[in-house]
Image (cartoon, rainbow, N blue to C red; front, side, top):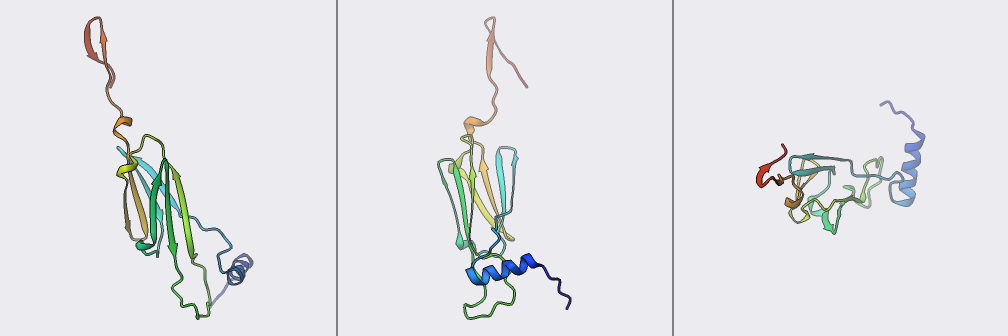
Length: 140
């Protein structure tokens, strides 16, 4: 077996053994995009039990909280512990043009997907303009 020495990884392992937590902060990797009349957010959360997710929205802040527990029993001697464990939190600041009452969440293959619809009042619409007594639609 060929092993390459990485002094920073070794330092992280030592800190984790001493402090009981990962020394390097771990974030939820995220992709976000708008598709039609909704915003879609994908968060990578592999190996986490969906029962350990907490997704909530308060005012304009959406908070995703997840916990990954170590699969090893407490009495086990860890040989390598590179997968981050603990509680992870990600906050997204939402605009007032989104319908926070209709957010949908699903979890598949280690990816949490959030679908946030655009509020009806924020969707583009035609404005009727009257000119010279005649009503005409102006615009695309």
